[in-house]
Length: 245
Image (cartoon, rainbow, N blue to C red; front, side, top):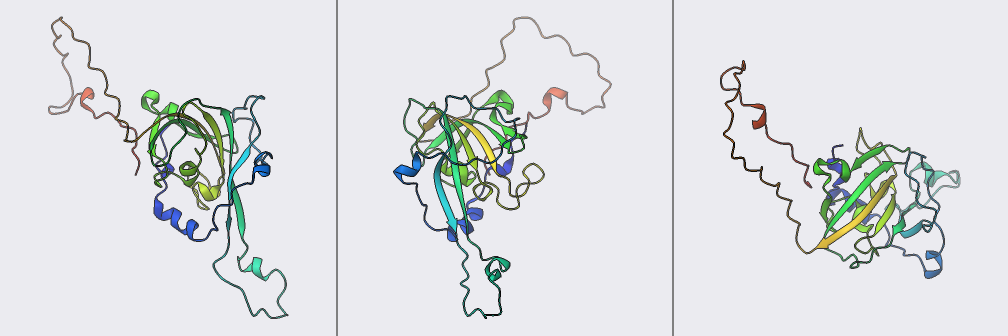
């Protein structure tokens, strides 16, 4: 399955959200022990082992309207604020640690190497690193707005070798418009991620091994009916996995 280029949400798209939100309200020690209420998920999404802990809130954001309503006539009803679209909203990034890693603690501003699989809440698998050419993991710089905000903040507290399920609200994913046709509008996303490694520099892509040497003389190519000047099929450029935009 081809990776979705819009997995990489540019910083400009994230700026309006940051301007309209209050500082992050981190859960208190008591609240951290409470289980978060998850959206209804399709049974097509792989079930987690019964032994794992319940979902927790990594953080909650509260978005407040930038317009102040005042001098309201008594003739106006109490629903004026809602009618004008001035209602505040709250949303949380939730997670379930399915495997606690034993490696280094996730650090900011490093290159992360991860495997992932993404689902819509209806069970549709829309992307997976395992489906990319060679099943190669995905690399990205953490916290630098090269990916959706739910990824840019969702690895906090993980250790290398750990696995986590992220439940990302649309406000921290592709926003109210989604990324049609793959990601519908206002889509909450489920990501199963595995934290493979982290490094200070971008990992170099694996170099494909050279073809095995052969002592046998090369056979003469068969006659072809293709027009003169047509390159052989082997000369077609190999497709490369998309890179961050």
